[in-house]
Length: 184
Image: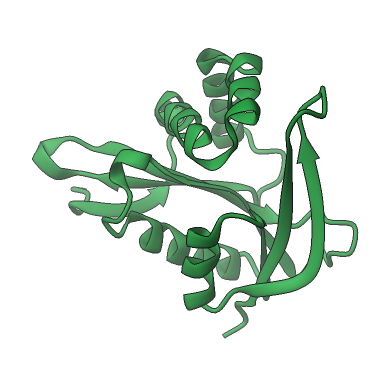
C-alpha cells in the first residue's frame, strides 16, 4: 500500500524517534523559552522515543491511539506531525463519551501545508470511531493561532482552565479547555 503524498494514519513503533523529534522541535515554538528549555533538559530524545514506542506498541487502553501526519513527497515517508487521542482523564469528564486530544504537534518546518487540518480531522474521526461524542483539548490561552484554527473547526471554550509551571515557578502557562460535539 502506497501512502498518499500527504496523509495521516496510526503510528508505527518504528516512528517513535521521529515523533519525539517533532515533539521536541514543537516545544521551542509552543512554550516560553524557560519552559521549553526545562522540558528539553528534563527529557532526552532517547527517553521520549522509548515512551512513544511503548504508547504505540503497548497502550494502557485500547482507545489510546497515536496518529502521524506524513509527507510522502520525494519517495520518503517523513513524519511531520503527530497526535495522541483517547478518553478524557479530566475529573469532570464522562470517560464513556468524552475523548481528549492529549498531544498534537506539527513540525514547525511543515506548518501551513495542510498537515494540521488532516491530523485534526483524523483525531475527530478516530475518537468518534471509538464511541466518543465530545472531544476536548487543553490549549495555551495565549496561542491565538491554534485557538483560531480550532474555532474555525467548531471548537469553543467550555469554561475550564488551569495553569502549568516550571518547578521553580519562574514560568507559568495558562491553559483553556476547548470542546466540540463529535456525535454527528
